[in-house]
Amino acid sequence: MSRPVLADEYDAKIAALQNQIDTYNAQAGALKAQGDTLQAALSRISNDKARIQAQLDLSVAKEKQLNEQIVANQKKLDQNKSVLGDTLADLYVDDSITPLEMLASSSNIADYVDKSANQEQVQKSVQQAIAQINKLKATLEAQRKDVQRVLADQKNTRDALAAKEAEQANLVAQTRGQQSAYEQLSAKSKSEQEAVRQQQQAAIAARFAGAGGATLIASGAAGDYPWNSSNCQMSGYYSMGGADGNGGDGKGYGCRQCASYAAWRVAKETGMYPMYWGNATNLPSSARSAGFGTGYSPRAGSLAVMHSAKSGGPEGHVGYVEAVYDNGDVLISQYNYNYGAGYGMYSQMRMSAAAWDEFIYIK
Image (cartoon, rainbow, N blue to C red):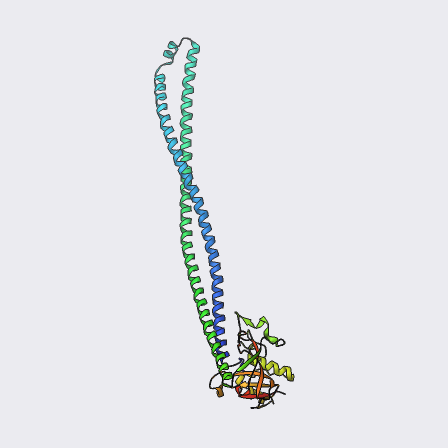
């Protein structure tokens, strides 16, 4: 006996599309995380570039200030050179006078001493002024060279960061584009999945209509059916996965599917849990292999099966016969026949037994 894990052939298509959706969503999620990481790195690069630019602006201002100081110092030096030139000329004239001539021109010895001292003081002041101006000039030039080197380094750093910023921004854009592409694929698969679900429900509805229609008694969720919890839910849809995969009920069926509910009702009524009995259309043969009887007349407590082969399409479906009425109608409880309650939900309906192809007698 094979071990298929889905409720019917439509569910196989839905399951395949769900796998695609989950794969696309996983890829989109991974790309989003990667894009967020790249965006964070881009923000750090932009911050570094802004910090370097601020330092560069300060260096440019400092260079401008130094250039202004150098110009002012040069002007001062030129002025002092002019003054010093006159002073040196005077000193040269004074130096050409012999000590005897200076003594003779002095009114007394004290005057002579004052003239000699004044000459030495002027010479000393001239030398000090020249030394200070030259020292300031050398200092300013050295500072300007240092600032120019810093400026060059900062400009190189800024340009390198700008190039890295552009490269990182391109990576972010590419990653976001790939993320968007996977999100679009996921949306497309969801749309296809919904179309298959509608086909599935339409096929079952057509069988009910062909047998005279059905009357909804209740819908929502079966209170004691154990697979209604969120651990059977993925990506906003109830997964069609098998027992060992996400969305499986652990018994070989997808959560909130017709076969899962039917197997659970068998276990509830008999104490024996039928695991991996297959698709709804395969249940009668699996049941006979397990020692259960089958037939074409409904009984309360039996499983009602809709075969895909007899109905001319892959709309295999199964429900539990809660009651049989005198006019031949049956009261069916089932999962995954959407009657306005949402996909994968419970419903209880009254309809003609002619809507079903075969019955499995579990009691």
